[in-house]
Length: 173
Image 1 (cartoon, rainbow, N blue to C red):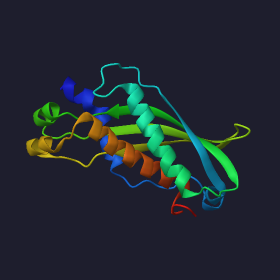
Image 2: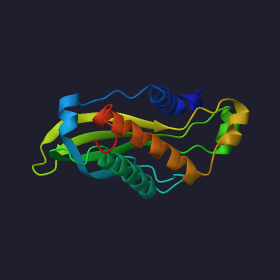
Image 3: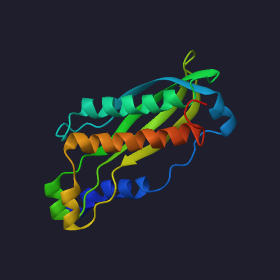
């Protein structure tokens, strides 16, 4: 029973990540924002990770920044997105076979600040990235290498952060 309780935060993250991302910034303000950079930190303290923590944080930062900078480069208000990676799990086939399912996931807090003054433009909000659910023991066979799992969850995180910040504004508006 205790082993299932240890998995509860991961299962909760997977459930929440399956939900559609809602915009977190009102449309008129979002249309003014031009993300000039993304900074990233982590509050994860564990050291035994399938991919080095520094690589996870940098991959997430790089992908989020690429997405955000491309969406509204002509916005009138330069801002910085501050990303704090709070949780992550990189699935592995052995655990997936034992559990009957496994999903890689990442959770981050995002704060948007003015690039010049550092003033908070949008209070912190949480965003998730995840792989698709891979139910049953056969789903374990679909688990990719740790680097590929990281790519998938970082891409999903970047897309969800973009939706949270810009809503339905399309790239290059």
